[in-house]
Length: 110
Length: 114
Image 1 (cartoon, rainbow over the protein chains, first blue to last red):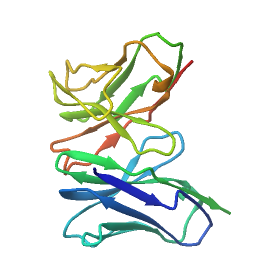
Image 2: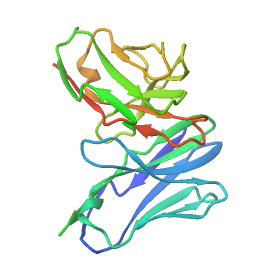
Image 3: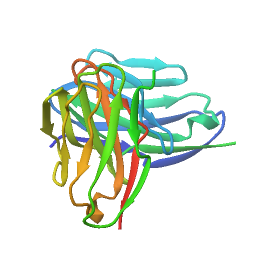
Image 4: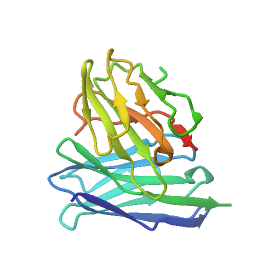
């Protein structure tokens, strides 16, 4: 069964600090891995999409990494801002099917 | 350019009532889909459509109906609401292939069934 597990479930960080979110997946056949940001009460918005051959992809202060051998991905947030408070969802594409992780809720405090 | 528009944003129903969640997109996307999001769980696919006149079931289709008469609209119908259908519903669309295309989500419709 295809699964996407994210950790931690939630975390609190101080404004200006960095943090890293983890995503482990057991999805086959792998096509790509996506990270979405979901603000409270809003729909998810795409941050990055990475294919098998991409190890790192950045979108501003967000940097995603992918290790297809260990089936792990991480999302690094640099110099966090209050607006980074949101849920971050890892999504893995296999064939024509998307498997969503449960998300990591990030709270940035001043 | 409005993107994906969902209505209503909030709805309260009694058990057994029926209703329709509306979804419209103005990006001329062929692929549209409905997901539900429950606490602690990943989004789950309810129904999807790869073009006007074509619909198919997703992971959790029971209790829901869809139709796709135009490229722009993809309504989700709850035939006889049950408390288990209390959730936040998201409509999403993409151009071309779901496997590679970016998925655009609406703002969500929060449904409570009493």
